[in-house]
Amino acid sequence: MQKQTMSFDTKEFPFHQLIAKFIDKGELDTLKSNEEDFNKTDSFYKNMESAPIFIKLYEALEGIEGEAFYQLYTRFISEVIRPQFQEPIYYQRKPSHRILFRDIEGVARFHKDSDYGHDESEINYWVPQTNAFGTNSIWIEKTQGKSDYACVDLDLGEYLKFHGAVLSHGAKANMTNKTRVSFDFRVIPASKFNEAMASKDATDTSTESKNPVMSNARKFGYCE
Image (cartoon, rainbow, N blue to C red; front, top):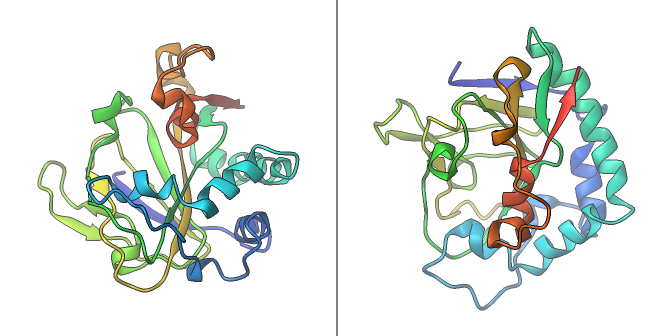
């Protein structure tokens, strides 16, 4: 498995509705960053983190109202993701949220997760909360090491399972006039997990530890 498109029931798992409630917006694909001071030399996702709506989303997720999202997410892991494996799994306790705004500025920075210390046994899941297509979607190389990138077109209710530690991936300038909202997480089969894959001590004051997108990627829960 390097890439596989799968689906889930959005009525059973209405993540998109919860996210829209958190930021008080009805149509997620119409979101604008409302940010005028982008650093055009930073990546799209780096600039995303300074957008007021993105900050508001994480404030809600870390508050009492965020508990509903994480309860739903934990059930999604148990009922949808766990049955895909023949053994227990470790999973990212809190997924990483991303918004590729339709008015975002910045530069594309493609990478493999192993470039940032992630183990090749990790499996990535990418779950868009809007339709994802063209330049508002994720782009992944078709062949490892070839940089032959292609976009992944998914409708709401579809998600992607892929090997992000070995396949280079990233975002391009969004020219679709539709914002893409998504979350992603990593899973490790229990037999391949070791404590070195988990986060640094909670007292770590590095930039990564203060960035929820980065720090959440190294905090794992266990699903029997």
